[in-house]
Image 1 (cartoon, rainbow, N blue to C red):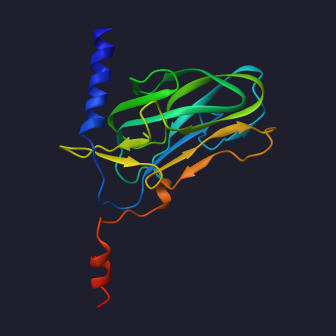
Image 2 (image 1 turned 180 degrees about the horizontal axis):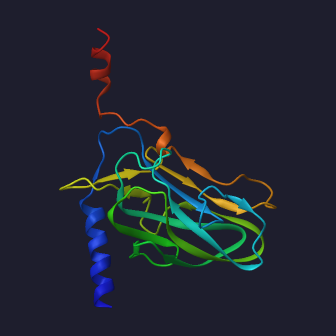
Image 3 (image 1 turned 30 degrees about the vertical axis):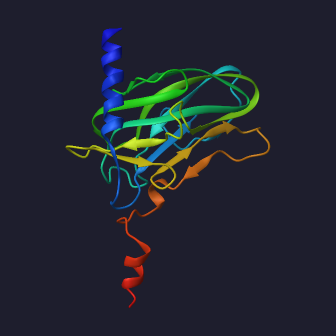
Length: 200
């Protein structure tokens, strides 16, 4: 119990100390739900019967191994349709100080991905799916980089992409692709006056 409390406090401190990123290259952080533990890009498949396992991937950037890695993340797992979230288990060195579907993840070594961060058990009584988004921390969906001495938080939607998964028979929506992830460019913060001065 004491070890779990220390882990939770350490993760909370990382997130609390992390500043909002002001400048960088392209957005870097992408999280995907997949039906496969060997391929991050399996977002649709036959509906699991009864209880099914899906995998949470940290895929980093669209270009494998480019850009900085991550040290922590805070977001939630949400089910829809006839699916119900049951449990989440970490893997490959990740830690989770969150509870239930509210993830507070950390990993050592500045992980750049792609890697399976964990697996989730889903109860199914029909067609449905999983998306990623807010945790129990209001409006929290961030990934923290490995910048030293003070890491930066990279927030959805500008610097994170969430990709969900669903059964192939679900009608009414496509699997989630939410946020910009690697597709956006971050720029230095500035003012409208500074921008206008460039054209005088």
